[in-house]
Image (cartoon, rainbow, N blue to C red; front, side, top):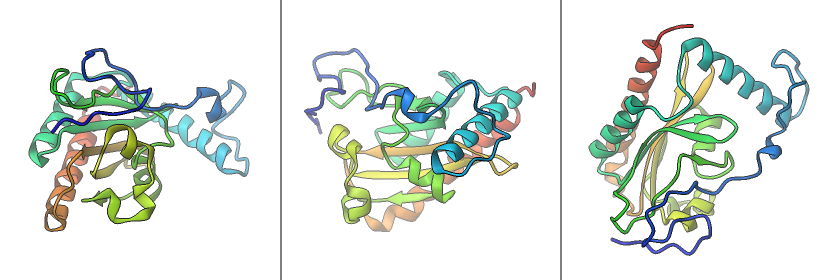
Length: 213
């Protein structure tokens, strides 16, 4: 199936260059050198900043790369292949959603080619981060809550399965997820959810065995 997007952020099917998914101005996240993770200030924006600082500190201490990783790419590929989905992601929530692991169709496949970052407001991974448990969407249009999403229009996604990456300390580092332009039967939802949960466990096992700084 070839999906022809009509969105300025996406790559025309005849062009092989890769661009990022929709993203917001980085100034919107309110980071600054004077902000400390030890300062508890009421408000969701301050809480988000504190969580981000803790996430960076933990990733640095664990020696986890915040750039493209061949190991994470392979984990994303294996997860997507096992689930039968076109796209797979190992996603760290930094200033933006950062896909340190990415699997997607070839550039000449006719499908949308995505980049390595996306706004932290878009997609369904923010919901996974907030709930701290897996989110199985066999058909994103089955629920109005999840149907109205920029990614639905930009990439033409119909199914999403994601799970959080939670460190033993309780810090949520990000997510793993698979997405596809085809919806899945409801009867397949549990199996696909379990595939993504298992992939998340593999990612955290890989992180646990990374050189500790």
